[in-house]
Image (cartoon, rainbow over the protein chains, first blue to last red):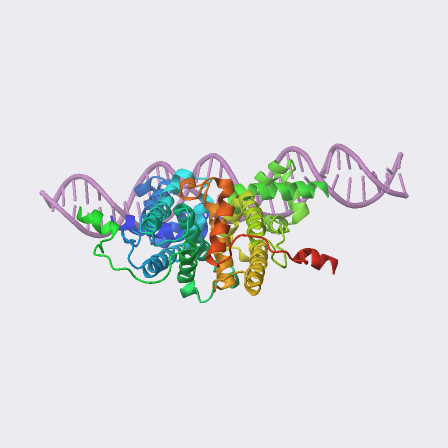
Length: 207
Length: 207
DNA sequence: TGTGTAAGCAAGTGACTACTTGCATCCCGC
DNA sequence: GCGGGATGCAAGTAGTCACTTGCTTACACA
C-alpha cells in the first residue's frame, strides 16, 4: 500500500536516469528504501513494475485551451509555456521512453497520451481561429500545430545539450515560438470580446 | 583493417537498436561476423569501440545553403527536405544517443556537431534574408531557425510513433513547415536574380 | 490472545556481462 | 619456406542480472 507507492516513485526516478536496462531491481529497491524481494512480491517482475510506473508518470492533465479563442496571443502563449514546462520537467524520462519505444512499445505506449491530447487541443484551437476569420492566411491546422509543438519539444529536449542553438532567454522561448506561429497564420495582436469564456475541459466536467 | 570497419559498422547497428547497455560485445561480434576477442584486441574496451562508432556515424556533411539567398522558398525547402531525410535515416541512433547523453556525455558529444552546424547555416541564411530586406517582418533569426529545425526534428523523431499528429503526406511535411516559417518572417514567394550563386561551403573549399 | 498479511533478511540459482589467457591457424612479405 | 601479425577458438574470471526460497519479524484486527 505505502511501500507500493515508494517503489513506483523510485522506479520512475531510476528509470529517468538509467533507462530500462539500467533500472536494476536492486537500484530501485535501494532508492525506495525497501527490500528487493518486496518488489517481486508486489509486482511479480521488473517489467510489470516499470510498466505501472510509466502508466503513472505519463497520465497528466494538460493546461486547457479555450474552446472559443478570445485573446490568441496570451492564450496560446500561456498554453505553450505550460506545455514547455511540462516537457522540461520530464525531459529525462521522455528521452528514455522514446529510446525504449522501439524495443518495448507496449510498455511505453502510455507516453503518447499527452502529446496526442496536446495536438488535438491545439488543432481544435487553431481551427477555431480560422473559422472566426482571425487567421488571415491559409494554413493547415495540423501542420501549424505540429510546428509549434515541434519547436517546443525540440527546445525542451535539446537546450540542455546545446544551449547556444536555442533562443535566449529560456523563459521567453515559448512566447517567441508562439508569436512566430501566430504571424505565420496571419493573426495579429489584440483581444476580441466574447461572452463565452468557458474552456473545453471545464465544459466537459460540468456536463 | 577490414575487420575493424566491420566491427564499427556492426556496433552502430546494434547501438541503434539496443543502446549502450544493450550493445553487448557478444552481440556486436556476432553482427560483425567476428570473434568477440577481436573486439578487445582492436579497441581495448567496449566503451572505446562505441565512442569510435559514434564519432563515425555523427560526422556527416550537410546539404549547403546559398550564402546569398536567391529563391528562398525552393532553397529552404530543399534544405529542409535533406535535413529531415538525414534525421529520419538516423532516428533510432539519435534517440539512443539523446537518451545516453546524460549518463555518458563525453561519449556522445560528437552527436551535437550536425545540429549545431545546421543551426549556424540556417541562422546565417535567415539573417541574410533579413539584410536583403526580403523578410518584411521583424524576427530573431535564431528563434526562427530553432522553430523550423524543431518542427523538422520532432517530425523525424515522432512520426513513427504517432503518425496522426503530423501533417500528411510525409513527403510534403518539410515543405509545409518551411512555407509556414517563411510566412512567419514575412517572405513572399518568387525568385530574385543575383550574380553571386556561390554557396558557403563551396566558397570555403575554393578559398 | 491468536491469526493473517506484509515486510525484512540471508542465501542461492542460472544466465549473462566485460574482459583475459593460452594456443592453434591463417596469410603476407621476404 | 619462414617469421610475424592478425585472427579464431576454448576456457575461465569476477561481477551483475532477475528472480526464488525459507525463515523471521511486525503489526492489525477479531
